[in-house]
Each structure stands twice: as structure tokens, then as C-alpha cells.
Length: 326
Image (cartoon, rainbow, N blue to C red; front, top):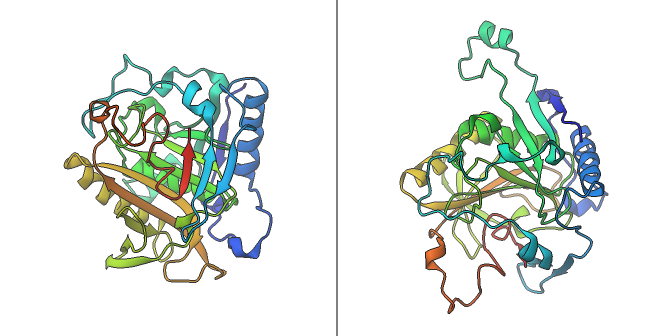
């Protein structure tokens, strides 16, 4: 499969999409159409370890309406993850990383053409990178759902699985390129169920409502909020009332503190209602959540665990209410 580059500008960003309550069929942007086309081609070419037509989906009755999906092949076919003891560990070229994948697994590279090198020099904005870094979308060969990819920012820089402002900006931009309300983005830190120490996000489509799309939040300070009605305490931010760069910077402030203190964490982004607004309000935004968590290492797992981790993990996909059961 030929590797290409998806070029875009800020004019391609979709800030508003119809709320789920309008019950319209999801619309697709140019980005969505190209991603889905190439993902389907990879599936037809046998790139994945299994198809996804065996997945069973159920909404669990109750106040929170968790969405459960049974995907038994992910347990048996998924690549064994690496083991970690610290939230921040150096990148290791000698073990599997995403520079090892073949071209057949690459969807495309992402390139923001809003700022060329000449424009950067003319504007004097030193925070913009004058060189073009490859931000790459790779298929997840053991998919959770349709369109499951890995977004690998600055893939050639071989960065460890630690969030940076640049990676967060690229992730938010990627969310904004989609017009599909079901596009989800997640990140697991080391010791927070990340399986590869190479900076990456999970991206996939899920056209079912999730708990976090309109979960209430409480103000903390400035543009920082906390989850008000969730089993796991966490931070909440939104793009509404902010800018893309500010959201990336404010998110990085939290993740940087967690990394410096060796605190594992999970991040999730989704479209949803503006904080404080009803679910049926016409105004939507990108919601971003960060959950600090107890570190998970393989040495902590025993045969007496209530739920063996190979059957059910709680990470960036599960915390928002999507229970991926293996």
C-alpha cells in the first residue's frame, strides 16, 4: 500500500458538529473519507490480525449506560506488550517501536500546511517548527473498533511514551479534521497500560454514545475542571472558550506534573456537549479528560486478582465508558 501525505490547513478544522440528540447520520470530512478508505484497503489486504465482524456490543443497563464490547480475538492475537516500572523511561531502539512497521501498515502522514517555514520566519513565531516532522497514522493490527489506528507524532524523533505540547497539538488537530462525532482519541502512559514505549495515541470510530460526552464537571481553577460523577477522579478540559494551542499547553501542564512525579495516567478526547450545557444543546466541543492512576506493573498481578488483566484492562478506552472486554 502506497504511503502518502494528508496535507491540511486550519481551514479544514471542524469545530462544530450536530449533537448526538439530533440523530443525524454522521457526516464524513475529507480526512474521514481518506482514513476509512485506506483502513478498508488494509483490511482487504490482510494487514490486520483479525476482522472486526465478530465483536458483540451491548449497552449495560443502569444510570451510566456503559457500552460493553466483547472482542475475544484481541486477547489471543494482540502483540504482547512491553513491561515497564517507571512512567518515564528512555526510548529503546532495540525493542519493538513503530519505526519497525512496514509500509502496508501506514495509513498516511499528516502535514499541517498552515505555516510554511518562510511564514514562520516572517511572523517571528519561534514556537512553530520550521522543519517538517512526520506525524504518522498506522493501523492497529489488533483493532478495538472500526478505523482503529495509532497516531505517532514525530515518528522519526523516536520519542518515548511521554506527552509533549507538540504531540498534544497534533492530536487535537487530528480530532478537528474529523466531522464524525464518534471519532475518539486516547493515550496511555507507561505503567498506565501503554504497551509500547514510542509516543503514540489510539484513534478509532465508535458510533455509540459514551458516558463522558455529557458527564457533568466542576470548576477547579481557570479552564481546569474535575469530573463530578465518575467512579474514577480525573481532570477535564475543553476546547470551547480556549484555543488549540492553549488546550495543548494546559493539558501538558498536567501531564508534565504527573510524569515528573512518576504518576501513571490515561487521556481521552471526544466530541461532546460544552461544559454546563444540556446534551441536546446545539453547541458541541472537544472534551479532554486525564485520569491519574496507580501504576500498573506486571509484578503487581497475582493469580488472586478478581479480574485477570489479560481479560479486562482499565485504560484510556475503558475509563470513558467503553468497556472493551477480551
